[in-house]
Length: 120
Image (cartoon, rainbow, N blue to C red):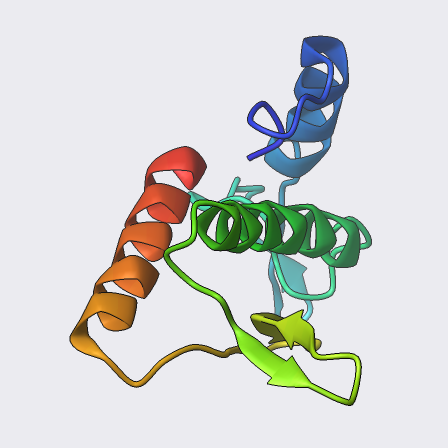
């Protein structure tokens, strides 16, 4: 996602070193076991987690805005000025606004597939 959003390659390498360099040792009944590295990236509670979440949310937001600009999703009009809104993000949720149609469901599916492809 960071590459897709235009972050510099050196910055991406630096962040990935922080994510991948973690190791743990479990203390069981007073004795420490061997150190091991987890097989997955970021853990809950990691100081980088909120920032990387925001970067990924920005990527998803960009994809939904691109779908809106292509005219496949107009979102929902709100207020007297008829502002259009097509998504809202919260700390752990996303609400998408659009028509209740098969076409719009396909657009959402395509956006999610593209997001998945970008994230790897």
